[in-house]
Image: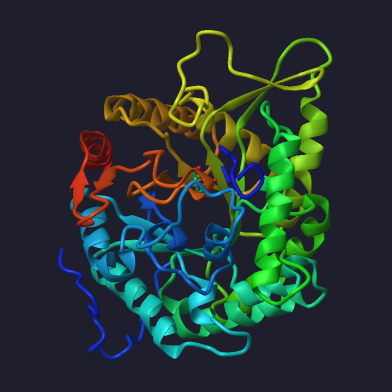
Length: 434
Ligand code: BGC
């Protein structure tokens, strides 16, 4: 999301799978336990029909900035067992996914026990399959009612979020391996440092889309993370992060908790680079909170060269990805060095990947990216794991289903999953380390 996009918003499951099962009880997940090798998804991008969420509404209203609606997405709401089976078959030991607040609390104060059970079942199934679940509590979407009452700009927003997190913690906290409170809460600030900032026409359309969503909700406002005034959201989101962390720790004191930040590999370009100004604005407020956490989640896709006038486009002739980013796999190694230096916390690579319709490009990207993580580890950066974005080709926010980030292709009609050669490249690397 230029703010809802960075790169512009920047077998066997079958319907009803597992519904007859009693909700699982958990033995507490072991902490520690070696390097995490994983793949990631987010609920709205893969589940389908997330109709009570704010972004679903934004996809429906006119005007909209979304290229197409999310619709059935990858139907992972029903096919999640198949997804976990693929993670396992690839020899990975970790699956990062998000629990959807809009499903668990579809109307203000109305809690869906069935969806709490659904996510608890996913977590239990991961653990039964030898997969460590890294669970995100907020991955861009909020319930529609929450955004229609003013979103993060309402004074009680952090408490509302913490109440949701408390329910998740009590229902399934014992099964979670690592918890990520917020996914990229700094994306709005990062958007201000884009080499291709939103045009005034797009800004106008964004405002019109939000106004249409407010009207459709019978409200005079509609505000969501990374789509409003980024400065206004920093304090409430950090407050919400702290309360969420406390809610998780109250139930499970030893559960590792952090947030994930969007951190391109920022590089100074030329004399008078504004890189330090960018770092102060985009990361520092979040790093300050992360210094109280157990780890810092880092999400990196490319580099950003910062000159005296701000961000520069990729160099002439540079290889690009499908979303126009520079192909620059070694970025992740530099980002994790920086994030660790700034926070002194262990780093979890919660996302790293590439949008490409040419899977051979991804197959080159993965070993190079992992080599850069290895080099940082050799230099002493404590890295907890590497989680590739994404397990599946999925709904890429404003860009719809065009960009292909997946290790696995998904047929848009049948939802059949096809593991790509690049996934085997990743699996081979992991198998040599296990
Ligand atoms: C987000 C994902 C997104 C990915 C690729 C990150 O900004 O967390 O939801 O799909 O990058 O753009």
